[in-house]
Length: 231
Image 1 (spheres, helix red, strand yellow):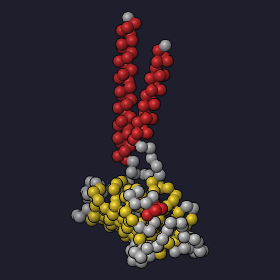
Image 2 (cartoon, helix red, strand yellow; image 1 turned 45 degrees about the horizontal axis):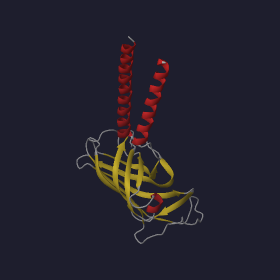
Image 3 (cartoon, one colour; image 1 turned 120 degrees about the vertical axis):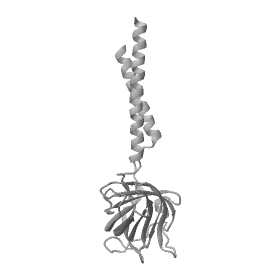
């Protein structure tokens, strides 16, 4: 009888563990798919751009955001930016289902040596203005969106005078673009003349390995709890 009870208990424990593990794996999958939506940026670096003009052509699947970058926040200081033409240009290909395939980001201009109040300020260490006056360029790598009109991008840094602030070439930068004009339908054209974006580094999120270790720990504690009750 005791052996039968032990077998039944082991089966119950095995089923329970599998149910919990399955739920965790589903949650991890959903989290990974939604992880690009709603992320935050670190305080530094942060290049802001205001009054951007956005446009999406549902026929060509082309999305653009163009305008001017205004300031850079770096290591606790705010630096005014100066440039010429439309020095902020983001281009992305996004199909009718909201699936992203490719894109690029280029933020031009240069640091003026003035802070947010217009007072003189020393340029940050490591910054050297080049002849092409480009702060940072990159290749868009990931995309997410909210129906409220906020778009999220990750990009691989490819160059620019401020590339070092982002960690250097091949580092991963992040973009939050709000008030894009998007309202949830990628099958329709949309546009805005009042979009704004923050461009910097994403706040770290737990890696899948860390989530797995955490899950394993939870399962272990649960098993320990059951064994303790069975004594």
